[in-house]
Amino acid sequence: MTTSPRTLMRIHFHLPEPDPGLYEQLLAVVADVTPQVEAHPTDFSADADLTGALRYWQQDAAGLVGLIRLRVLALHASRPVRAPDPVE
Image 1: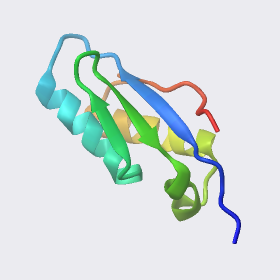
Image 2: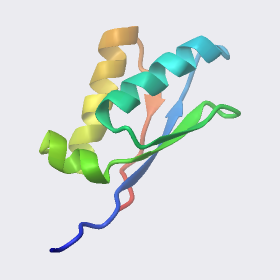
Image 3: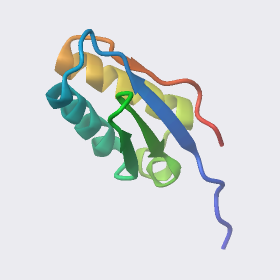
Image 4: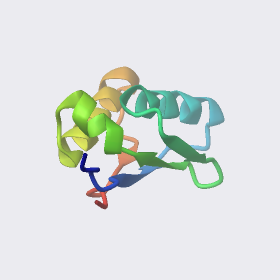
């Protein structure tokens, strides 16, 4: 059995003004894609482990980043997410 390398991503939510309620909603969007999310509320960011989600969603890391961006845009009518290419 081979194990795949971990794929981690740092997500920054660029909110127009500090809004802990919106931050929690955005974290929930990420948690719908991968349950492995570590919140960093001091700077409205989060770390997400995409390793298991890659196989579940049958996407590569860039595809999951696009999925998260699309869901944030659809659910919150804004683009508050900036997620660089994941580190594998």
